[in-house]
Image 1 (tube, rainbow, N blue to C red):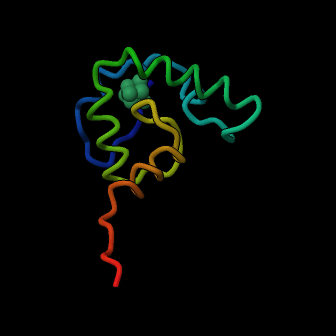
Image 2 (cartoon, rainbow, N blue to C red; image 1 turned 135 degrees about the vertical axis):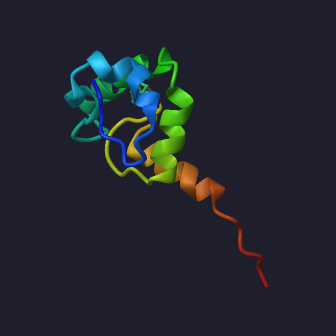
Length: 90
Ligand code: SF4
C-alpha cells in the first residue's frame, strides 16, 4: 500500500503497508468487529521499519482517520492531549 503524504516524505516508499489492502488501515470504528481489524493493521505496523516517521507525520499533520504508526485516531488524540502544556491553576 502507498498512501498519499501531504509532506511528500519518501519514508512511505519503505512502508510495510505498501503491499497491503488500504482498507485494513481504515476500520469503520473502534469497537466490536473493528477491534480485530485494528489489531491486524497494528501487527503490520509493528514490523514496519518506518513506524517512527509514520507516527510523527500522523501526529504533526493531525491525521484524523486510520491507523498510522500503530495508533488509532483515538490514541493519537490522547497523545495530543498528553502533550498539551498544563495551564497553571490560580
Ligand atoms: S507504521 Fe504502519 S501505517 Fe505507518 S507506514 Fe508502517 S505499516 Fe504503514
